[in-house]
Every structure is written in C-alpha cells, then in structure tokens.
Amino acid sequence: MTLEELDKKYVLQTYARDYTNFTHGIGSTLYDENGKDYIDFASGIGVNSVGHGNEKLANAICEQAKKIIHISNLQVIEPQANLAQKISELYNEDVGVFFSNSGAEANEGAIKLARKYGEVKFDKKRYKIITLENSFHGRTLATVKATGQDSFHPSCFAPYIEGFMCAQNLKDVENIIDDETVAVMIELIKGEGGVAALGHEEVTHLAKVLKEKGILLIVDEVQTGIYRSGEFLASQVYGIKPDIITLAKGLGGGVPIGAVVTPHKDIFIAGDHGSTFGGNYLSTAAGNATLDILENTKKSGELDETLTYFEEKLQEVLASNQDKFDAITGIGLMRGLKAKNSDIQTKTIKAAMKEGVIVLKSGNNTVRFLPSLTITKDEINEGFARLNKALVTL
Ligand SMILES: *Cc1c(COP(=O)(O)O)cnc(C)c1O
Image (tube, rainbow, N blue to C red; front, side):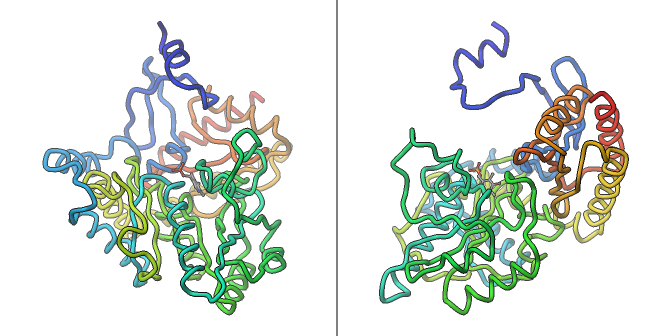
C-alpha cells in the first residue's frame, strides 16, 4: 500500500489532504521523501514558531521527556508555573493562566470563564457572547457556533450551544449588546477570514465602550499571539488590555498547548474547570524553551528586521503582479496577499507547492503567509524567488 492508500484506508478523511510526505526539516526548509526541499512559509499553520529541528527546543523536550512527561494537575507542575509567570512577564500584566491542549479548548475555557463571570458579577445572569462575521474560533460544538461563518455550523451537527450572537463588524457589536451580553470575542487579525486586521481606532473604541458597560473583551490570540504580530501579543500592538486572551498555536513550537490568560483570577475556583493533559511537563517545558528563544529573537532586533524584510518582499510581489493581487493584508509575520478571485488563490498555492514553497489559503481569495518567526533572510529570498517563479506559470 502507498502512504496515500494507507491514509485513505485507516484515517478518517476529514481533511482535503496534500500527499507530499515530509520526512524532516531544518529551520524553514522542509524535505520530502525524495529529497526535494521546500521553503516553509506556513509553519504548520503558525505553529512552528521557532522553525523545524530547532536544537534548543528539541533538547528541552528530550531533557524533560527523560525526567517526567506527565503528572496530573492534582500535583503542582514546576515548568507550568514557570511558563505562567513568563507569559505574565512578557505581557507585563498581573494575570493568571489556565493551560489547555489546543486553541479551541482555550476558547472553551474562555467561554466558561465569561459565563461564570456573567453569573457572579451581575444581579441578573448574563451569558450571551458576541463574535464577528468571518471569524474563526475552533471546531468544538461551542467554538464552531462562536465562529461567524455559517459553513462551520451546518444542521447535521445540531443542536449547538446557545448564546452566541454574530455581529457584522465592530460598529454592529454595539447595536447587538443587550442586558444579557456578558462578553465580546474577537480576533484582532482574522486568521482564517482573509488575514484582515481590525482598525486600531475601532478596537480601542470598542474596548472603552465595553469597559464602561462592564462587558468582557475576549481576544482570541490563538493565531496572532506569541510574537506573530511583532509584539508578544497583538493586543499590545493595539494598546488594549482584554479581560481574557487565549493562546495556542505558536506557544509550544509544535507541541500541543493552549492557554487562557486573564486578570480576573478570582472567577474560577477549584473544580470549575480542568484538563488531564493541559499544561503537563512536556508541553510547558516546550513552551518555556519556545518563549526563551523568541524573547531573544525579539530583544536582539532580529524579529523586527525579519518582519520589515518580509513585507518588502511581499510589496515586490504585489507590484509585479497587479493583474493577480489587490493588496497586502495583516500585520507582522501574519500576512495575506489578496487575490483578484478564488481561482488565482487556489492556483497560486498549488503552483507554489510545485516550485517548492509552502503557502496557505485564508478566506476565499487570500494567500496566507505564516512563516516561522526565526526564518532567515536567505530562506525568505529563496521562498520569494520560488513564489515569483510559480506566479509566472499561472
Ligand atoms: C487555529 C485557531 C483556533 C483553533 O485552534 P485549534 O488548536 O485548532 O483548536 C481558534 N482560534 C483561532 C483564531 C485560530 O487561528
């Protein structure tokens, strides 16, 4: 049986998969079973924040694996406490952290926290959460309902969790708020919805309005967090202090981990929420190593140089392909090239793969770039050379 046949026979076919068989990677270069190399501008959908084969991360994982991989959350876990402290220090706010295993699970935690807040902080219980059209918050029954795209909650999976309201944009949020609204959940840059960044002023205005009304602001930073925007959190780029922030993708450098971060430390009490695996020794050791690497990348000025250089390269692509693309979207190393139509989007991604550079789709017309945050200038040059070659073939 070929690998493709094996996969099709034994793995439930929930993904429209590409069957390139990658065997190893170093930095932002991946190699398939035939030895062909690819520049990775996708980093596993923004997960491999420190690249492939990172020695420091690999060593931290190996060292930890030899000592203790897992002990339940009924025991204190030293690397977990250290990682929570690190998140608080990098954010520079007095926050508490709950660890989960994924982004959707972090958002579930945020939703539970908000609903309990709505019970204990108001005379009449508040439970409704407003989210935005074209958002993406995960694949569990609550988070697909929170996701503001009808295609994510078809009738076959009904009934869904109640209490989610969808606003068309930030202005519309204010019209939808009622006396049962407890929170508004947003992505500052819509990862799956076209890499569209929200406007600075609109966001700060909304944050102010919500504060006045006592409604929680939840920012889903599963994709935008962990230096993706150029700062540790995209919330810092926007100068806002949300009531709840969720993290996941880049936090463990590839090891599954998620986090709920909040200054409201007194809402959850023992027994309210939990996870068997969440924040175990292995994933938090990986998180600590990942944040150490990225903190240095930021402090040394390398990250800022990389973002500037990457943007310059994208501008060149846009300038020489005016017939195919309309605009560059996003912030930092979370970028989109908005294509004229979905056909150009699909063909670009396919042709790029053939030339040996991996890019992603976002929404129905955007080509998405989520390179590793430690990508080198040479890798960027090579990736864009291949992309330009691919675009000529369209
Ligand atoms: C990826 C993503 C999620 C879901 O994370 P999983 O780890 O796949 O559960 C949620 N929100 C945003 C913004 C994401 O990008």
